[in-house]
Length: 70
Image (cartoon, rainbow, N blue to C red; front, side, top):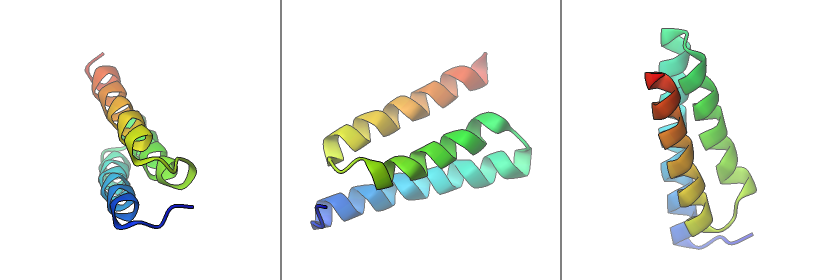
């Protein structure tokens, strides 16, 4: 596991954004941000590369926006 400052910062950033989506989804009783937030928090544990983690996180956020507007 890579414990550099950059990887910890990026993990904390996406985890915090995921927590925000999770709390929003729970309060609004909306499944898309709830499970999207869980997925954002989960990728920080399973993906070590900061670049791949950021690409996947941006894709998840774009997917949540797309599904939310449908």
